[in-house]
Amino acid sequence: MVKNITSGVLITAVVLGSATPLKAQNISGLSGGMEYFLYGVIAFTIIVLSLTIYLLALKNKYQKQAALRSGKVDEHSGLRKWWSALDKKYFTRAASLEKEADVLLDHDYDGIKELDNALPPWWKWGFYITVIVGVIYLFRFHITNSGPSPLQEYDKEIAAAARQLENFKKNNKEAFDEKTVTLADEKGIAEGKKIFAGTCFPCHGNSGEGNAVGPNLTDNYWLHGGSIGEVFKTINNGVPDKGMQAWGKTFSPTDVRNITSYVLSLQGTNPPNAKAPQGNLYAPSKTSDSLVVKKDPTQTKATR
Image (cartoon, rainbow, N blue to C red; front, side, top):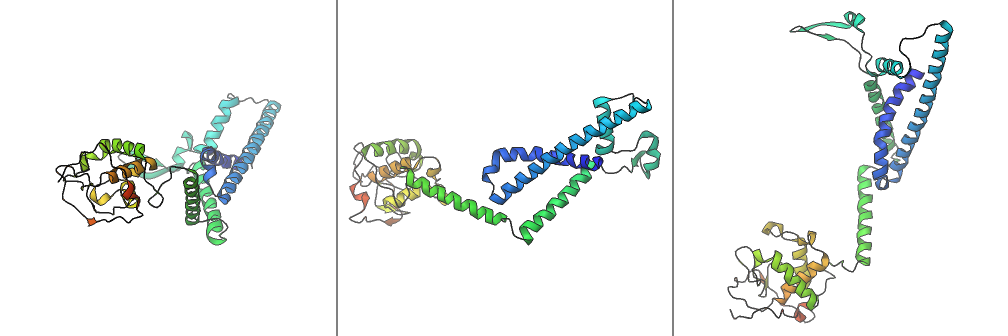
């Protein structure tokens, strides 16, 4: 009994060692069923470890008493003896030098011979436990369906993330999107100009006149829509097939709004060397915010 429990505890100790960091780091992200299952594995492991330690101590005590009564005192005792016995029985279980002839195979490769030693007990116990866990998993998740499938856990986590995002948008003043964005004030436009000058000018020119890569931002023609929501969406999400990155991953929503407002303020500035119009003509409605964008006072108005 002690022998079997000891073999099992060597494997469960490894399970406990790997499960503890998982519990400490990711237990909050597990679903309810998996969380309780992990708790059960850890509790069972602790009980088995405690029982095994007690039985090993009891066995060692009786062996010492028997040795004293018989007058036989082993040459090695204590930790060294315990480890030697443990290694031979539960880790390697290899044949001794005196018995190697009994397990020697007939194979001979350039003088190299092979011993038919048994598989290490720790490996076999690991295989047995894997089979047991596999049966439990199959029964729980595919037969009784008492636990969530990976797809169900994924859907649950996606729904939770969507709720968190919705709460963030409600409680965060910087949570703009193409449907809720409004124009920035003069200070915001000035901030947007700074970002534009440091980030956008390689493709759109210093004054938004456009170049070989980017379109002209000062006329009324737009490739992806000219309303404030459409311009915000283009800047925020990018246009990967045209080489424009999603600046929403680099800048905050407020920064993207400021850039959008600055770009709209360039309408009608007519910089020199402006690129020819591209896209479709955009005619803002009377209620469009883009009609009341204050022009950047630093822009030079030159007739094209």
